[in-house]
Length: 352
Ligand code: ADP
Image (tube, rainbow, N blue to C red; front, side):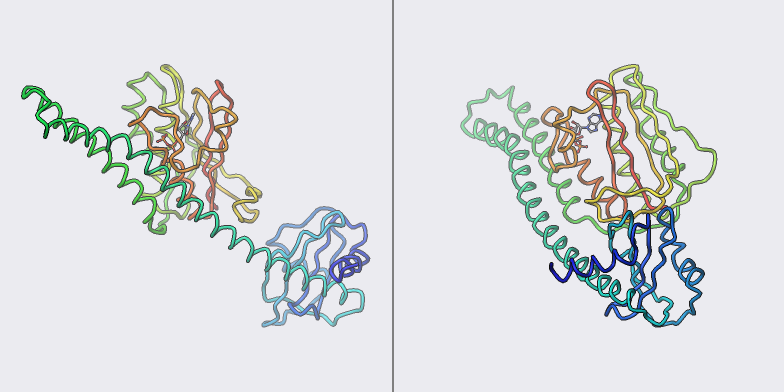
Protein backbone atom coordinates (compact mmCIF):
# COMPACT_ATOMS: atom_id res chain seq x y z
CA UNK A 1 0.00 0.00 0.00
CA UNK A 2 1.41 3.41 -0.96
CA UNK A 3 1.51 6.13 1.74
CA UNK A 4 -1.25 7.91 -0.15
CA UNK A 5 -3.47 4.80 -0.17
CA UNK A 6 -2.78 4.31 3.53
CA UNK A 7 -3.88 7.85 4.28
CA UNK A 8 -6.92 7.38 2.12
CA UNK A 9 -7.84 4.23 4.03
CA UNK A 10 -7.54 6.00 7.38
CA UNK A 11 -9.61 8.89 6.07
CA UNK A 12 -12.32 6.55 4.94
CA UNK A 13 -12.31 4.95 8.38
CA UNK A 14 -13.36 8.33 9.75
CA UNK A 15 -15.84 9.41 7.13
CA UNK A 16 -17.14 5.85 6.78
CA UNK A 17 -20.16 5.46 4.57
CA UNK A 18 -21.27 9.08 4.96
CA UNK A 19 -22.82 10.47 1.79
CA UNK A 20 -20.79 13.59 2.29
CA UNK A 21 -18.18 14.72 4.73
CA UNK A 22 -16.11 17.83 5.13
CA UNK A 23 -12.63 17.67 6.54
CA UNK A 24 -10.61 20.66 7.61
CA UNK A 25 -6.86 20.48 7.81
CA UNK A 26 -3.95 22.84 7.84
CA UNK A 27 -1.26 22.55 5.21
CA UNK A 28 1.00 20.44 7.43
CA UNK A 29 -1.92 18.17 8.22
CA UNK A 30 -1.58 19.02 11.92
CA UNK A 31 -5.10 20.15 12.77
CA UNK A 32 -8.34 18.83 11.55
CA UNK A 33 -12.06 18.99 11.92
CA UNK A 34 -14.43 16.55 10.30
CA UNK A 35 -18.14 16.88 9.82
CA UNK A 36 -19.80 13.73 8.55
CA UNK A 37 -23.50 14.21 9.16
CA UNK A 38 -24.57 15.51 5.75
CA UNK A 39 -27.03 13.73 3.54
CA UNK A 40 -26.06 15.87 0.55
CA UNK A 41 -22.84 17.83 -0.07
CA UNK A 42 -23.24 21.34 1.40
CA UNK A 43 -22.73 24.46 -0.70
CA UNK A 44 -19.18 25.82 -0.67
CA UNK A 45 -20.12 29.24 0.70
CA UNK A 46 -21.90 27.79 3.75
CA UNK A 47 -18.85 25.80 4.88
CA UNK A 48 -17.22 28.32 7.24
CA UNK A 49 -20.52 28.61 9.14
CA UNK A 50 -21.00 24.86 9.08
CA UNK A 51 -17.64 24.33 10.68
CA UNK A 52 -18.16 26.80 13.44
CA UNK A 53 -21.76 25.71 14.03
CA UNK A 54 -21.30 21.95 13.96
CA UNK A 55 -18.02 21.66 15.76
CA UNK A 56 -18.65 24.56 18.14
CA UNK A 57 -15.33 26.09 17.22
CA UNK A 58 -13.68 29.36 17.98
CA UNK A 59 -12.45 31.46 15.10
CA UNK A 60 -8.67 31.90 15.18
CA UNK A 61 -7.41 34.36 12.57
CA UNK A 62 -4.23 33.39 10.77
CA UNK A 63 -4.92 29.68 10.60
CA UNK A 64 -5.02 28.34 7.08
CA UNK A 65 -7.47 25.53 6.50
CA UNK A 66 -8.18 23.41 3.49
CA UNK A 67 -11.69 21.98 3.45
CA UNK A 68 -11.93 18.63 1.74
CA UNK A 69 -15.16 17.31 0.39
CA UNK A 70 -15.94 13.60 0.39
CA UNK A 71 -18.94 12.18 -1.43
CA UNK A 72 -20.05 8.58 -1.18
CA UNK A 73 -16.73 7.62 0.34
CA UNK A 74 -14.68 9.19 -2.50
CA UNK A 75 -12.41 12.15 -1.79
CA UNK A 76 -13.19 14.99 -4.19
CA UNK A 77 -10.19 17.02 -3.18
CA UNK A 78 -9.59 20.31 -1.41
CA UNK A 79 -12.14 22.93 -2.28
CA UNK A 80 -10.14 25.97 -1.39
CA UNK A 81 -8.07 27.44 1.39
CA UNK A 82 -9.10 30.11 3.86
CA UNK A 83 -8.35 31.42 7.32
CA UNK A 84 -10.27 29.01 9.42
CA UNK A 85 -11.26 27.80 12.83
CA UNK A 86 -9.24 25.30 14.83
CA UNK A 87 -9.79 22.70 17.47
CA UNK A 88 -7.37 20.40 19.30
CA UNK A 89 -6.56 17.53 17.03
CA UNK A 90 -7.75 14.05 17.87
CA UNK A 91 -6.14 10.81 16.72
CA UNK A 92 -8.44 9.64 13.93
CA UNK A 93 -8.70 13.16 12.59
CA UNK A 94 -4.92 13.53 12.52
CA UNK A 95 -4.71 10.64 10.06
CA UNK A 96 -7.23 12.30 7.81
CA UNK A 97 -5.35 15.54 8.21
CA UNK A 98 -2.28 13.91 6.68
CA UNK A 99 -4.48 12.80 3.81
CA UNK A 100 -5.60 16.41 3.47
CA UNK A 101 -2.00 17.49 3.11
CA UNK A 102 -1.39 14.70 0.58
CA UNK A 103 -4.44 15.74 -1.43
CA UNK A 104 -3.26 19.32 -1.42
CA UNK A 105 0.12 18.21 -2.75
CA UNK A 106 -1.60 16.17 -5.45
CA UNK A 107 -3.67 19.20 -6.32
CA UNK A 108 -0.56 21.37 -6.56
CA UNK A 109 1.10 18.80 -8.81
CA UNK A 110 -2.01 18.63 -10.98
CA UNK A 111 -2.04 22.42 -11.25
CA UNK A 112 1.64 22.41 -12.32
CA UNK A 113 0.91 19.71 -14.88
CA UNK A 114 -2.05 21.66 -16.22
CA UNK A 115 0.19 24.71 -16.66
CA UNK A 116 2.65 22.59 -18.68
CA UNK A 117 -0.17 21.23 -20.83
CA UNK A 118 -1.51 24.74 -21.41
CA UNK A 119 1.93 25.81 -22.62
CA UNK A 120 2.09 22.84 -25.01
CA UNK A 121 -1.43 23.68 -26.11
CA UNK A 122 -0.43 27.24 -26.88
CA UNK A 123 2.52 26.04 -28.97
CA UNK A 124 0.25 23.71 -30.91
CA UNK A 125 -2.08 26.68 -31.41
CA UNK A 126 0.75 28.80 -32.84
CA UNK A 127 1.50 26.02 -35.33
CA UNK A 128 -2.16 25.80 -36.25
CA UNK A 129 -2.36 29.57 -36.66
CA UNK A 130 0.72 29.67 -38.88
CA UNK A 131 -0.55 26.84 -41.08
CA UNK A 132 -3.99 28.44 -41.32
CA UNK A 133 -2.50 31.84 -42.12
CA UNK A 134 -0.29 30.42 -44.85
CA UNK A 135 -3.32 28.69 -46.35
CA UNK A 136 -5.56 31.77 -46.14
CA UNK A 137 -2.97 34.10 -47.70
CA UNK A 138 -1.82 31.60 -50.34
CA UNK A 139 -4.72 32.04 -52.76
CA UNK A 140 -4.94 35.86 -52.79
CA UNK A 141 -1.15 36.09 -53.07
CA UNK A 142 -1.15 33.83 -56.13
CA UNK A 143 -3.86 35.97 -57.72
CA UNK A 144 -2.03 39.26 -56.98
CA UNK A 145 1.34 37.97 -58.25
CA UNK A 146 -0.28 36.50 -61.38
CA UNK A 147 -2.10 39.73 -62.35
CA UNK A 148 0.98 41.88 -61.63
CA UNK A 149 3.14 39.63 -63.79
CA UNK A 150 0.63 39.76 -66.65
CA UNK A 151 0.51 43.56 -66.40
CA UNK A 152 4.31 43.77 -66.47
CA UNK A 153 4.57 41.40 -69.43
CA UNK A 154 1.96 43.45 -71.29
CA UNK A 155 -0.17 40.31 -71.80
CA UNK A 156 -3.33 42.06 -70.57
CA UNK A 157 -5.07 44.24 -73.17
CA UNK A 158 -5.12 47.94 -72.12
CA UNK A 159 -8.93 47.98 -71.71
CA UNK A 160 -8.65 45.14 -69.16
CA UNK A 161 -5.78 46.69 -67.21
CA UNK A 162 -8.13 48.54 -64.83
CA UNK A 163 -9.94 45.25 -64.05
CA UNK A 164 -6.62 43.56 -63.27
CA UNK A 165 -5.60 46.45 -61.00
CA UNK A 166 -8.99 46.27 -59.23
CA UNK A 167 -8.49 42.54 -58.61
CA UNK A 168 -5.06 43.29 -57.12
CA UNK A 169 -6.57 45.93 -54.80
CA UNK A 170 -9.43 43.61 -53.72
CA UNK A 171 -7.14 40.70 -52.99
CA UNK A 172 -4.69 42.92 -51.11
CA UNK A 173 -7.56 44.23 -48.98
CA UNK A 174 -8.61 40.67 -48.28
CA UNK A 175 -5.09 39.85 -47.09
CA UNK A 176 -4.97 43.00 -44.95
CA UNK A 177 -8.28 41.93 -43.38
CA UNK A 178 -6.97 38.46 -42.57
CA UNK A 179 -3.76 39.85 -41.09
CA UNK A 180 -5.72 42.35 -38.99
CA UNK A 181 -7.88 39.57 -37.57
CA UNK A 182 -4.85 37.45 -36.75
CA UNK A 183 -3.20 40.43 -35.04
CA UNK A 184 -6.39 41.13 -33.08
CA UNK A 185 -6.30 37.52 -32.04
CA UNK A 186 -2.64 37.49 -31.03
CA UNK A 187 -2.48 40.89 -29.35
CA UNK A 188 -5.79 40.77 -27.61
CA UNK A 189 -5.79 42.95 -24.55
CA UNK A 190 -7.27 41.73 -21.27
CA UNK A 191 -10.86 42.68 -20.49
CA UNK A 192 -11.63 46.14 -19.08
CA UNK A 193 -14.75 45.33 -17.15
CA UNK A 194 -17.56 47.71 -16.33
CA UNK A 195 -21.00 46.98 -14.94
CA UNK A 196 -23.60 46.36 -17.64
CA UNK A 197 -27.07 44.94 -18.04
CA UNK A 198 -26.71 42.00 -20.45
CA UNK A 199 -30.20 42.82 -21.73
CA UNK A 200 -28.91 46.13 -23.15
CA UNK A 201 -26.05 44.30 -24.86
CA UNK A 202 -28.39 41.76 -26.43
CA UNK A 203 -30.91 44.41 -27.48
CA UNK A 204 -28.16 46.47 -29.16
CA UNK A 205 -26.86 43.40 -30.93
CA UNK A 206 -30.34 42.63 -32.31
CA UNK A 207 -30.71 46.26 -33.42
CA UNK A 208 -27.41 46.22 -35.29
CA UNK A 209 -28.00 42.94 -37.09
CA UNK A 210 -31.72 43.36 -37.79
CA UNK A 211 -31.11 44.71 -41.33
CA UNK A 212 -28.93 41.68 -42.18
CA UNK A 213 -31.60 39.28 -40.88
CA UNK A 214 -34.40 41.17 -42.65
CA UNK A 215 -32.64 40.72 -46.01
CA UNK A 216 -33.10 36.94 -45.59
CA UNK A 217 -36.59 37.32 -44.06
CA UNK A 218 -35.21 35.88 -40.82
CA UNK A 219 -36.98 36.84 -37.59
CA UNK A 220 -34.32 38.08 -35.17
CA UNK A 221 -35.64 38.63 -31.66
CA UNK A 222 -34.64 39.04 -28.02
CA UNK A 223 -36.75 37.52 -25.26
CA UNK A 224 -36.46 40.04 -22.43
CA UNK A 225 -36.52 38.34 -19.00
CA UNK A 226 -38.16 41.54 -17.67
CA UNK A 227 -35.63 42.25 -14.93
CA UNK A 228 -32.08 43.66 -14.99
CA UNK A 229 -29.20 41.20 -15.37
CA UNK A 230 -26.26 43.22 -14.14
CA UNK A 231 -22.80 41.72 -14.67
CA UNK A 232 -19.19 42.89 -14.79
CA UNK A 233 -17.69 42.49 -18.25
CA UNK A 234 -15.88 44.31 -21.03
CA UNK A 235 -18.77 45.79 -23.04
CA UNK A 236 -17.01 46.05 -26.40
CA UNK A 237 -15.42 42.59 -26.16
CA UNK A 238 -18.71 40.95 -25.22
CA UNK A 239 -20.44 42.84 -28.02
CA UNK A 240 -17.87 41.37 -30.44
CA UNK A 241 -18.70 37.87 -29.11
CA UNK A 242 -22.48 38.32 -29.41
CA UNK A 243 -22.25 39.92 -32.87
CA UNK A 244 -20.17 36.98 -34.04
CA UNK A 245 -22.59 34.38 -32.68
CA UNK A 246 -25.63 36.15 -34.10
CA UNK A 247 -24.01 36.81 -37.50
CA UNK A 248 -23.07 33.11 -37.72
CA UNK A 249 -26.60 32.11 -36.75
CA UNK A 250 -28.09 34.34 -39.45
CA UNK A 251 -25.62 32.96 -42.01
CA UNK A 252 -26.54 29.36 -41.11
CA UNK A 253 -30.31 29.93 -41.12
CA UNK A 254 -32.32 29.61 -44.34
CA UNK A 255 -34.81 32.33 -45.36
CA UNK A 256 -37.93 32.62 -43.12
CA UNK A 257 -36.07 30.99 -40.21
CA UNK A 258 -35.67 32.35 -36.68
CA UNK A 259 -32.77 33.51 -34.55
CA UNK A 260 -33.66 34.09 -30.92
CA UNK A 261 -31.57 35.64 -28.13
CA UNK A 262 -32.40 35.10 -24.48
CA UNK A 263 -30.73 35.24 -21.08
CA UNK A 264 -31.27 33.56 -17.73
CA UNK A 265 -29.57 32.90 -14.43
CA UNK A 266 -28.38 29.32 -13.95
CA UNK A 267 -27.71 28.30 -10.37
CA UNK A 268 -24.90 26.05 -9.21
CA UNK A 269 -23.52 25.18 -12.64
CA UNK A 270 -20.57 22.78 -12.94
CA UNK A 271 -18.38 24.15 -15.77
CA UNK A 272 -16.78 21.70 -18.24
CA UNK A 273 -13.59 20.19 -16.71
CA UNK A 274 -11.28 21.66 -19.41
CA UNK A 275 -12.15 25.21 -18.26
CA UNK A 276 -10.61 24.67 -14.82
CA UNK A 277 -13.48 26.77 -13.38
CA UNK A 278 -15.35 25.86 -10.24
CA UNK A 279 -19.04 25.40 -9.60
CA UNK A 280 -21.08 28.57 -9.08
CA UNK A 281 -23.96 30.62 -10.48
CA UNK A 282 -23.61 31.69 -14.11
CA UNK A 283 -25.63 33.95 -16.36
CA UNK A 284 -26.37 32.26 -19.67
CA UNK A 285 -26.58 34.36 -22.85
CA UNK A 286 -28.20 32.19 -25.47
CA UNK A 287 -28.32 32.46 -29.27
CA UNK A 288 -30.64 29.87 -30.78
CA UNK A 289 -31.26 29.41 -34.51
CA UNK A 290 -33.39 27.20 -36.71
CA UNK A 291 -30.54 26.83 -39.19
CA UNK A 292 -28.62 24.05 -40.86
CA UNK A 293 -27.01 22.79 -37.65
CA UNK A 294 -23.51 21.40 -37.29
CA UNK A 295 -22.49 17.84 -38.12
CA UNK A 296 -21.11 15.70 -35.30
CA UNK A 297 -17.58 15.65 -36.75
CA UNK A 298 -17.50 19.45 -37.08
CA UNK A 299 -18.90 20.11 -33.62
CA UNK A 300 -15.52 19.48 -31.91
CA UNK A 301 -13.68 21.73 -34.34
CA UNK A 302 -15.86 24.86 -34.26
CA UNK A 303 -13.55 26.77 -31.91
CA UNK A 304 -10.32 25.89 -33.75
CA UNK A 305 -8.67 28.91 -35.35
CA UNK A 306 -9.28 28.95 -39.12
CA UNK A 307 -11.94 26.26 -39.01
CA UNK A 308 -14.63 27.38 -41.44
CA UNK A 309 -17.18 25.79 -43.73
CA UNK A 310 -17.83 29.09 -45.49
CA UNK A 311 -16.79 29.85 -49.07
CA UNK A 312 -13.26 31.20 -49.58
CA UNK A 313 -13.34 34.91 -48.89
CA UNK A 314 -16.54 34.72 -46.81
CA UNK A 315 -15.17 33.46 -43.53
CA UNK A 316 -11.76 33.20 -41.93
CA UNK A 317 -12.76 30.76 -39.21
CA UNK A 318 -11.33 33.03 -36.50
CA UNK A 319 -14.62 34.34 -35.10
CA UNK A 320 -15.45 31.54 -32.68
CA UNK A 321 -11.89 30.99 -31.46
CA UNK A 322 -11.59 34.70 -30.67
CA UNK A 323 -15.02 34.64 -29.00
CA UNK A 324 -14.04 31.64 -26.88
CA UNK A 325 -10.79 33.30 -25.72
CA UNK A 326 -12.64 36.51 -24.81
CA UNK A 327 -15.21 34.61 -22.76
CA UNK A 328 -12.44 32.55 -21.09
CA UNK A 329 -10.75 35.83 -20.11
CA UNK A 330 -14.03 36.64 -18.35
CA UNK A 331 -13.86 33.32 -16.47
CA UNK A 332 -16.69 31.86 -18.48
CA UNK A 333 -17.00 29.62 -21.54
CA UNK A 334 -19.11 29.10 -24.63
CA UNK A 335 -21.17 25.94 -24.91
CA UNK A 336 -22.74 24.67 -28.10
CA UNK A 337 -25.42 22.17 -28.90
CA UNK A 338 -26.50 21.29 -32.39
CA UNK A 339 -28.13 18.63 -34.48
CA UNK A 340 -27.62 18.56 -38.23
CA UNK A 341 -30.75 20.02 -39.81
CA UNK A 342 -32.36 20.96 -36.50
CA UNK A 343 -30.65 24.24 -35.61
CA UNK A 344 -27.93 25.27 -33.22
CA UNK A 345 -27.71 26.90 -29.84
CA UNK A 346 -24.62 28.73 -28.59
CA UNK A 347 -24.60 29.64 -24.90
CA UNK A 348 -22.16 32.13 -23.38
CA UNK A 349 -21.74 31.49 -19.66
CA UNK A 350 -20.55 34.44 -17.58
CA UNK A 351 -19.97 34.30 -13.83
CA UNK A 352 -22.82 35.96 -11.94
P1 ADP B 1 -16.34 31.90 -39.84
O1 ADP B 1 -17.69 32.48 -39.50
O2 ADP B 1 -15.39 32.88 -40.39
O3 ADP B 1 -16.42 30.62 -40.63
P2 ADP B 1 -16.30 31.14 -37.06
O4 ADP B 1 -15.16 30.74 -36.17
O5 ADP B 1 -17.16 32.25 -36.57
O6 ADP B 1 -15.66 31.48 -38.45
O7 ADP B 1 -17.21 29.87 -37.32
C1 ADP B 1 -16.60 28.64 -37.70
C2 ADP B 1 -17.61 27.70 -38.35
O8 ADP B 1 -18.55 27.28 -37.36
C3 ADP B 1 -18.46 28.29 -39.46
O9 ADP B 1 -17.78 28.28 -40.69
C4 ADP B 1 -19.63 27.32 -39.46
O10 ADP B 1 -19.32 26.12 -40.14
C5 ADP B 1 -19.77 26.93 -38.00
N1 ADP B 1 -20.87 27.65 -37.33
C6 ADP B 1 -20.75 28.72 -36.51
N2 ADP B 1 -21.96 29.12 -36.06
C7 ADP B 1 -22.88 28.28 -36.60
C8 ADP B 1 -24.31 28.15 -36.52
N3 ADP B 1 -25.05 28.99 -35.79
N4 ADP B 1 -24.90 27.13 -37.23
C9 ADP B 1 -24.15 26.29 -37.96
N5 ADP B 1 -22.80 26.36 -38.07
C10 ADP B 1 -22.16 27.33 -37.41
